[in-house]
Length: 113
Length: 111
Image (cartoon, rainbow over all chains, first blue to last red; front, side, top):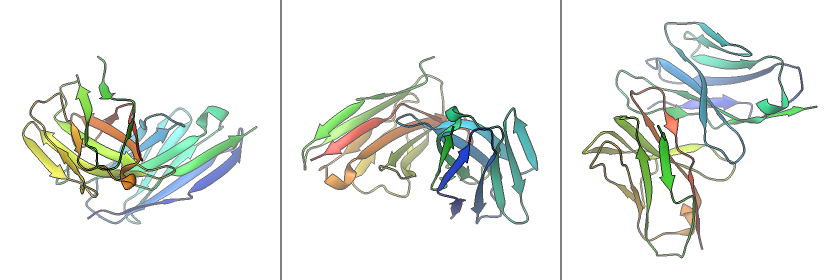
């Protein structure tokens, strides 16, 4: 089955700096890659996703890139703000055959003033 | 739409007791999921369903059971609660095999 590794497990950046979180996946047939943000004590919420036919996707200060050859994808947050502090989870799925997402282990992002 | 709702929000169980965690969605989603999240850890899939009457095991199904008699409801049953089942339980739903919308979670403490 699919295996997703996520790095780093914790990340501390100063407000205004950029943050990058990386994930690798094992199943070359995976074609859907979402990112979820979970604030302390809250539910995970989808913030951005990318499909395998696209190399990059942006939404304001966040972007996701996908390298299918290397089987890795990354979340980029620019101009970080204190409200970006949260745990971020990547996930992968082969939507053609699987009905579930495989999640990474999460990255705790701390944005300091 | 209320989205995905879960009850109760918090529950304390004694070892050996049983309970049902309720999950309801009003978005007519076919796909529903149960996850557990231990403190400071990631999400582990317990069970999932691709439609009414169809359920399948995730990566950590032992000690749990599910049923899916309607599109809206996907209850999770804990039999013989153990301290290892102390966790936060999230229900999620989606229209496809892609985007999942999570409920607010149920915090369970087994003592």
